[in-house]
Image (tube, rainbow, N blue to C red; front, side, top):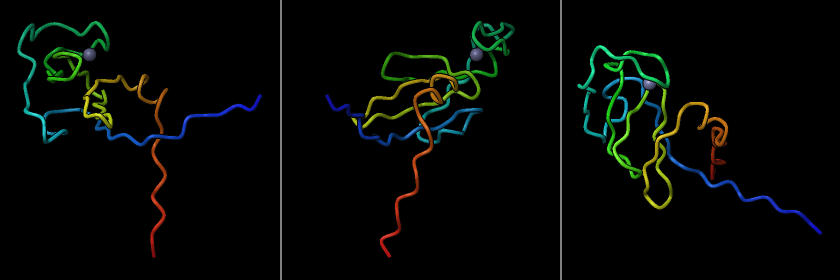
Length: 96
Ligand SMILES: [Zn+2]
């Protein structure tokens, strides 16, 4: 039986490192537990950020991606999750 693969579906994604990296989002610096350390990335919590994402308010670690799906959902991906699933889209061929 022949096998098929899903056609690539381009998505938009932006990588967050610090406030201002994702301009359309309001910046909400992480205020709770300023002296704490993130369980995921071991960096200080005050280097993190809140984002109001589709799956609920979530914490962004520096380097995380925010993916906008074709249906408009906004989802958080760690760098590993992102690069396991996505690669840079090839340039569209120029119409000229
Ligand atoms: Zn973190």
